[in-house]
Amino acid sequence: MAPKLIAALSDSTVFLREWLANPQRTGSVAPSSPQLASAMARWLPHDPDSYVLELGPGTGAVTAALLKNGLRQNRLVAIEHNPKMARRLREKFPRAHIITGDAWELDELLRAHPEMIQSVGAVISSLPLLNFPHEKAEALTQKIRAVLRPDGHWVQYSYHLGKKQVRGAASFKLRHSKIVWLNFPPARVSVFKK
Image 1: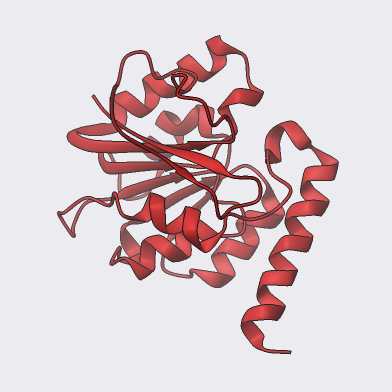
Image 2: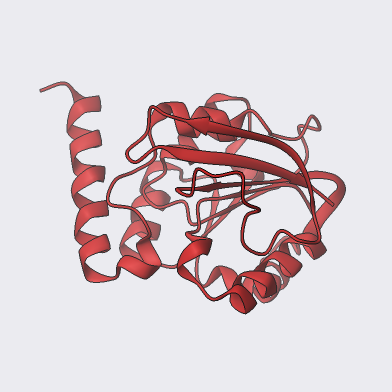
């Protein structure tokens, strides 16, 4: 078997196993498709020195697309709650800043980071916000708003395909929205600005 196919099967197995253990936290039974990852990665900041914060990277499907689209590994900060997936990410992306922790504590985690990251040019989120109460989603998005530069983007996907506002996005302006049909299941990518 080709190495890429083996890696994809391995990532899918990890995802399914972790989803079965905690479906609310994992949110998906499979990694993001290349089409979904690409739709998210196209919103990277223009400034190559900007940090990008990835929330819920899982096994790194979107992470790989971010790097393929020009993000330098040392400018990526990823917060992954699942220790197994975080360990896997560190192996795949050794120069990225992979933090094992809760995205809802992103402000504290970034303050504790050795480079004292105070703002980011983009937040790329694969968190299943619909799985959490509105108040909890709102608390997270306020922290995203606080860390996001004025010209930055918050990119979020959801399996809710309707045009309904993303949970917690009331204080953001919707800039772009697109359904990615070639994903399991299909997903809507929404892009927000402050």
